[in-house]
Length: 164
View 1 (cartoon, rainbow, N blue to C red):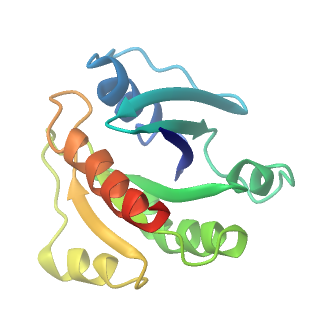
View 2 (tube, rainbow, N blue to C red):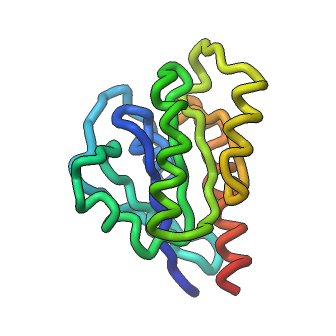
């Protein structure tokens, strides 16, 4: 049995907390509660216990932000399919994560896929190729549960292989 840390990174309000709640508790709430600082959840998968760090939406001006990323074995970068600026921020989130933990595997969650959106294949391919560390890009929905488990399981599989 071993444990490791992953961190969800993304702009404010993209659904990081909702994705974690769906994965850990299989629940969803329409109520928006902004994460202040960090909230830590855990889930056991096989021999691994995942410590899932939910950090507040990224801001350049908080020096403590990078401290939350230390020790992570992988990252889930979350963007809101309905907010172009959150999609455009994916690249900077990957860069920041890799400044702290070089070459850690990254999954990208394009959240709120249950809502109508206009993201085209060209943009999807661009996002997939932002870094060789991107192992998976999924359109997720914390509300319906679509691709949420697949997201966490893909990252878990790669990390467990690296740690064994």
